[in-house]
Image (cartoon, rainbow, N blue to C red; front, side, top):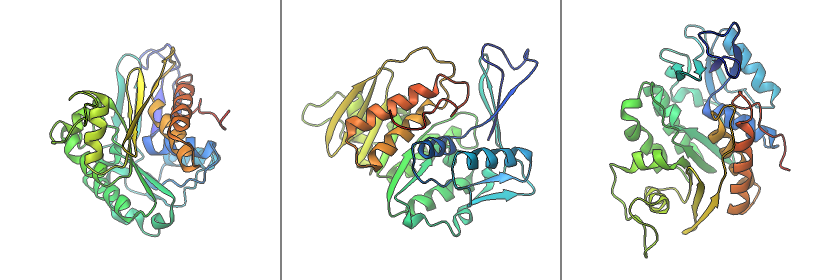
Length: 297
């Protein structure tokens, strides 16, 4: 999407100029991974308009391969408005991406990729994208990664748990927030904590219930900790949240740092620290990706 925001400290209603940027859960993560030195491709569809041109130029400048981004001559590129007073508002109904189906994967070498990522946004913007996301996960032979990214105001938001759960069932690595994971699992039955590990509502218990659905590694972001269930073992990292210019995009940045570390053979603890650093860095900028570091320090 094209993202429109007022300068920091101002409202869209009163600002005499708006800041133009690009945004989107998967593309944000792609930018982060590219800045950390990984080869990344983004698969999507944009309108054949100036907004789409701007997004392609911005992603190409970041080193993201856009060879499999289609252009729709009849439907526009999606738009997001960010306003401190009103929050985030999406304008994606009828957009080019909202009608992309499994055909968008034609020619995409998903089976050869070391990892693929789909988020719940793809599941929620339309029936065709939902089908495309499932097909992408089912065709992949490498690490299959999902971030539920539950969002209001989209085509499938009223059924978001129902629509996103099939993505989780098909992934190997789940990257999620504690509240959204609790919402998704509310309608499922799981074993919860085992051998006295955690209570029914503990983060660890949620992670173990999620693992029962299929993922072999579950990362759960909370308010003060980030926990990981990997190889049956639970570990946590305490985090401190400083003052944020704009927290939007922090989860995508965390994902990029964590994924990059794990793909390079890093241990869980190192991946957690890398993700936390990247997430914190992004909050220092009004852009979803502007504050992302270009290399691990």
